[in-house]
Length: 284
Image 1 (tube, helix red, strand yellow):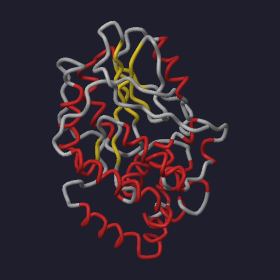
Image 2 (tube, helix red, strand yellow):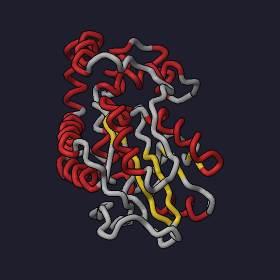
Image 3 (cartoon, one colour):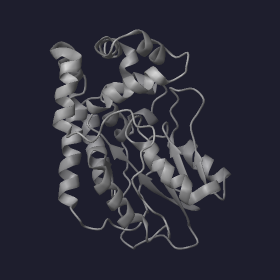
Image 4 (cartoon, one colour):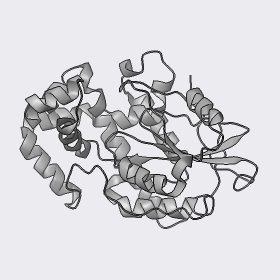
């Protein structure tokens, strides 16, 4: 199934009769918890997290649509498990939030978080048993590597929404191109490594649509030192992993690295321009 993408509208924002819903598609370890903290403060009881109890669950667009329909006072949703494409409805209009991150910079955050996480899942158990390089080599040696192997290409392409076995999908260049087109269709998106600028863009885009909303920096669930430049963090990562495991991580994320470079170029091209305000979308 070929995706039809979320598009900028030609006729401006939704009419007041249409419920506006801010949906944060929260990619794991992409600074999304900090975004959610501000959303909860603004929307209060009209904010909700929507994830299944099974960590590996995938929530498809029709399931997100049903969840919103079932909660008529809902104004904002956050989900690790929802996947594009963005659903449409005659009763509401979705404004999607995405943050992307350098795929290798995610790796250290995943390990540190998994070491702290209390769970019987294999990931936290192995993180507590293994040193960092050993853990990354284990993750990337088989099917358990799904959370750190071309994650953002698979996520943005929507490929995991259209199959009965979403974690069996392998990223390829066709899915990379789907992810690029989807990214280009968004009025605004964020880059974790340029977090403050990303918040400013979200503010310009969404404040006319959600009066009183505020995007401000807050450090929640932070498991890495993001104050150092990216190049320095990657240099440290290579030292910690060693050349062999670091290069395995690069090969395993070659498509995500290309997507991240593309996202950075789009981010630069957008500059200080205010994103298109509306939220109509083509696709389901």
